[in-house]
Image 1 (cartoon, one colour):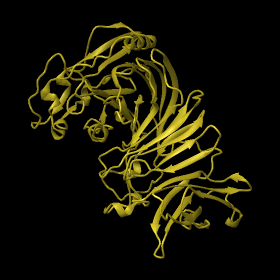
Image 2 (tube, one colour):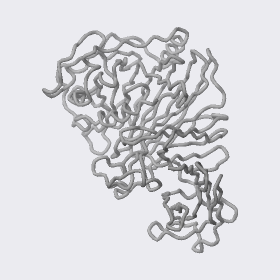
Image 3 (tube, helix red, strand yellow):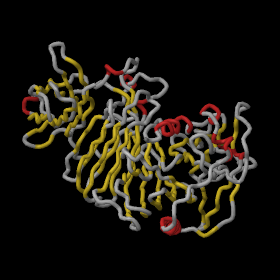
Image 4 (cartoon, one colour):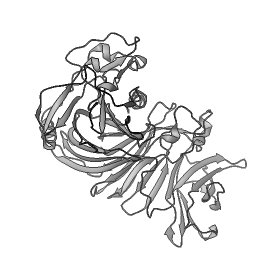
Length: 511
């Protein structure tokens, strides 16, 4: 089972009172640094390779008094931003460190690199602030920080706002300037949704390179460890309207890796207009992401609306050399959600672009039943067709773009804007698919060819009309499931034999 409670808690815990702070002189005690040792990027790879040749040994846990903190108690302690790394300097970044405890019972080694030397950041309770509701906790040599938060001048000079957090297993999150945290990424996924249970690798050490004055990028190295493998990662993180992370990684297999998830993304989808009958809620929709987009190796662009099924669903979109994929949030109006607190309309989408030919495999989508929005129940990743043998290594690179619409737009077909499904009084179910407006859509929509297929049941011929609000074409059809428990739909609008729209794929299941 996925750590969905941990993931959703991260979104709340990361928004500490230090999210936006003006620069100021660093007070004592400040961050304490240990003894310097030489550092190169190759050191992380060497350490990962050597670690893979030994038996897996879990890291020690912090004292029980920290592990037993309640959610409310954990929120009563936070990093004092005046103690941030590089605070009081002309450096373009600030780094906050995050406390251990609750969902984060094992410390992470965190180092700062400058001039080829790495110094560990030593745990110091004095860098945190807390309320009088925070209980007494034990302080000993097992303590360490649980992760880090990056801040920079995103929107206003002198105000350092957070834009990325690395905390918990190999999870990390990012946002473009002005956005609200939503979906997460991971270093690696192993055995997701397998009957024997998922394995969650951990980032056990970080090395943060000191950026030069004026730099918009920061480089973060990470060491990954897990019972099945180890890994060496390098992130070049560039903040802005779109947050970009260039990732280079090498995985070393302790044992044969049969089910590997590369560039895994994790999100939440509770309901939208396709399944209102299951949720009595004042909001029209609740989700961090509303669809999986794939640009496959053949050049086809696929849109698969997300679902919250009654039973676990796993979909594999076979491909060779994918051009990109991502979990997107296309609903962008406040009225799409009407939520003044969660601000789902402001959550980022996340697009993955491979850095080299990934070969044969599949973009995998896992949809887990959920009844509350606190659970992250959507996972997507690239699964290579070939396993990684024990003792072997696997190199990969890719780019992660976090923004409201980070997928490529040039020479792409019309996007799907919305999908809605409802019952017809006379029987059957009506489906509407809205596409965006664009200048190349003919005024006479009868010129469009409708490609519409289903795996079971019966359905009407499709009808295309113009949506007066969006200005784009709307495809509508009725289907009759008959005895089918599951139906796969495929639809596309074409013009003069060429694709005009994305390929819309949908899996209907009987409620």
